[in-house]
Length: 261
Ligand SMILES: C[S@@+](CC[C@H](N)C(=O)[O-])C[C@H]1O[C@@H](n2cnc3c(N)ncnc32)[C@H](O)[C@@H]1O
Image 1: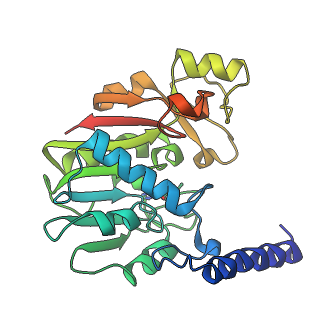
Image 2: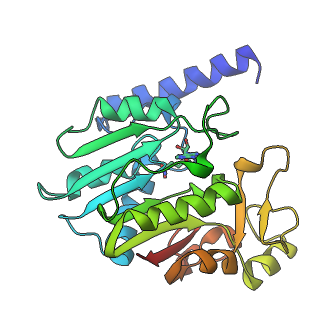
């Protein structure tokens, strides 16, 4: 993007933020648009949507201890701040310092913690110094009731993704649940891709792991459902609209996988 196009975008985003403030929509936990690097869609609406999924599908209660893996800039932390009570807690970590610094300065430090992991990700942290393949999450075994990875595995290559799923299960208590979103490759999504009904197309979708853009694999990665089942004790799957499903019959954009600790 050219310098003038970037300046025009920045001005447009600022104008939208100013309009929100003028309309009284100034939630202090919604970051300015220039910092919303976590994906398209309404920041608050997507966060609220996932609070619902965590309650309905992953057994979240106000007393839960929650781990948000790849927490971004607090899209799911925001509704949790109003939902968790004094017995509940939230920990999040991410490779992007902008989100971690922004959140750490705004959430109550007694129950909400945000940690930076300087791990390499070509899409999100190309200058990261360590590999995510061996990264041990900085939390004890059995520390959480619920772990979530919303739109994170979809940006990890297979060795990192497999390791992260194992780490997520390690830090969950017996009876705990992992909610992770995926682009799952199965008969339905492959047929929809052939019929060009999916919102994303992956190269070589018959493989176990497929990427949308080989030049930037971490932009979007899809996994065969069997690959996921080999690594997780899957409790349930909610197919998403990305595979061409009408929104009335899908819970979310990506496929949601609920796994047991
Ligand atoms: C699409 S964003 C989603 C963020 C957040 N989960 C949400 O739903 O708002 C993907 C996030 O994954 C983070 N990420 C990428 N690689 C990571 C890694 N190895 N460990 C932790 N976070 C990572 C990115 O920095 C980014 O914040």
